[in-house]
Length: 214
Ligand SMILES: Cc1cc2nc3c(=O)[nH]c(=O)nc-3n(C[C@H](O)[C@H](O)[C@H](O)COP(=O)(O)O)c2cc1C
Image (tube, rainbow, N blue to C red):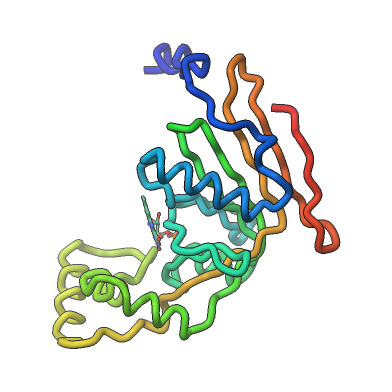
């Protein structure tokens, strides 16, 4: 495998490059929305999936994929278990990094910022909109803790399925986080590895933009 991997290269020269980085303007939220819409229109698979990296004890950094559920009031909203590995990391260190990758468009967006749990009422409303199996699953899974056997998880699912025959309330340990960005970087693949990069850094309430060497 390693010989094959060393010579593995995507040919960006054949790629039909969409609008350049200049079209992004001065507002990173508008720029994000434009690129997100273009990713969705281009049928990028799982366009709303992103990598979230958090800092744990002993400076241990961990990453995992999550779904972005909303961009509202300049905050990126996602949902998870507050007691999970990531939830515990966030409770100690609110600074996180978020990464989107849309390979079909050869685009990457990096976002850094601080996360906070969102209002319970907003989590309640979103939880109520989820399919019943997902709701029961949120009760059944003690996310990131050791599971002795898979059958225990199935038992737990059945237990909560019976406990909540009608409406399923939101578990107190499950809800949303809002990421408030302080830094964005938009990356557009270009031929000859002369890729475009544009950063937006929040300085005294103003977004400062810069181009970066690829
Ligand atoms: C495509 C995809 C989407 C995912 N979306 C979520 C999500 O929105 N929320 C979530 O808690 N886990 C999601 N997961 C599972 C996480 O990657 C991760 O396994 C889980 O949250 C536990 O992470 P932790 O132990 O670091 O807290 C998703 C996984 C994949 C592959």
